[in-house]
Amino acid sequence: MNIVEFTSLSNKPIRMIEGEIIFQAGDPALNICFVDKGRVDIITRDGEKRLRTYDAGSLFGIPEVMSGINWPAMAIFRGFGSVRLFPGQVLMEKIDALPDDHKNLIASLSSKVAVKKAR
Image 1 (cartoon, rainbow, N blue to C red):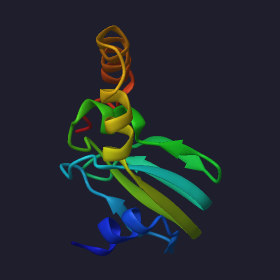
Image 2: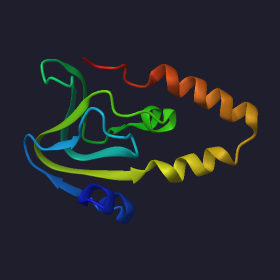
Image 3: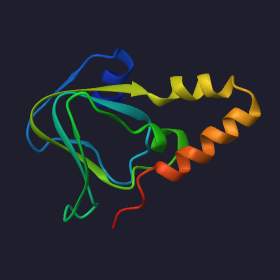
Image 4: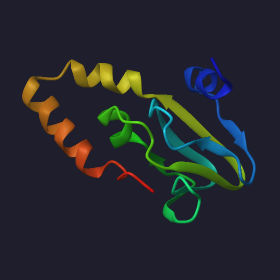
């Protein structure tokens, strides 16, 4: 178990500094991320293009976790601050308890909004 996995289970904020990587393209999308302070850029695998930016108070990763995909891009921290990681498994357990029609709708929506594969 690495520090990111441990911290997601303990629900404690991870202190971050400029340039730290939260996840890399190809890593399994297992955690939902909340930016406490600072900013997170989602960038292409090669680091050439910024796809999205999340500021303090932003939550991201739900569609990717729900789709069961690997992260198609990487998340890099900007500035100084912290993020919290929440285990996607907890969300998936709650969804599994829903009626099939609801689960199918959620699965369809999540696959449409997940970050597209980044080059």
